[in-house]
Amino acid sequence: MARITGLQVSSRDVAGHPGAALIELKGDLDTPGGQKLAQEVFPIIEKGSISLIFNFCDLEYINSIGIYNLMRCFKKASNKGGFLKLVAVKDQVREVLEVVGLTAVIRLYNTLDEALADI
Amino acid sequence: MPELRIDMPYDLNFIPGIRRCISSIARHFGFNEREAYHIETVVDEICNNAVEHGRSAKALRVLLSCVFRKGNMEMIVKDMGGRKINIKEIFQRNVKLLKEEIARGELINQPHRGRGLIIVQNLVDKLDIRVTASGTTVRILKKASGQEVK
Image 1: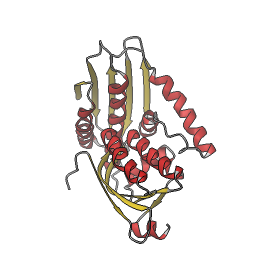
Image 2 (image 1 turned 60 degrees about the vertical axis):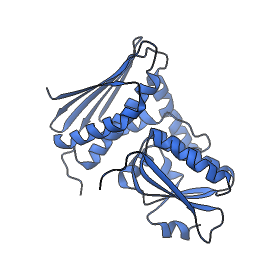
Image 3 (image 1 turned 30 degrees about the vertical axis):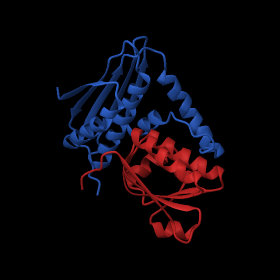
């Protein structure tokens, strides 16, 4: 399958879990993608969805700017008492997250069902 | 000598295409999928630094050179932005800072940037950063493992 250019962000509320949002990322969470992530996710947090589940199954790439903006989302949500979880992280993306220590502070799940069961 | 040279403007929009191009080429020189991905990341992080920090009134272009041999890649990225930001010092400081943050469990407390070269250092065999009055040169060496990834 051809790689998507840029980053696509979509979100929806999680049924049965008030204040929780599922955020689907597709493509590359790189420098422009990181900026887009913050622009799209900050309003979601400000509207009250502070329990964030990011579905990474279609995320092909991440860089340090993407990680920085992901951490900004985590900080913003956790300051309001929320959390951030990652689902279906590809091996190559996980490896980069491990290098910067992020896998020690953000919970990773293999499937969305596992992440939802842990809310 | 199998060298690829790219002469790019100070424009972040060029980097996604350049990193994918070099990663794709690496697959033809003995690098497996995982290693080609590492190369994509390395190109991205170093070029982002050059474009972001190496810009000045006199600096017109970023110069990238990749020499490929079977199972071996050497890349040099040069900017001519002078010494206004010493990324070598910032990198060394950030390595120390990251270790301290991880040890104290404070990774999220103060999200900050500066992790790009830490990522690069972990994905290559050699990393060299030279900062001079004319600009910064980053050189990396990456070797293929010779193993297919299943």
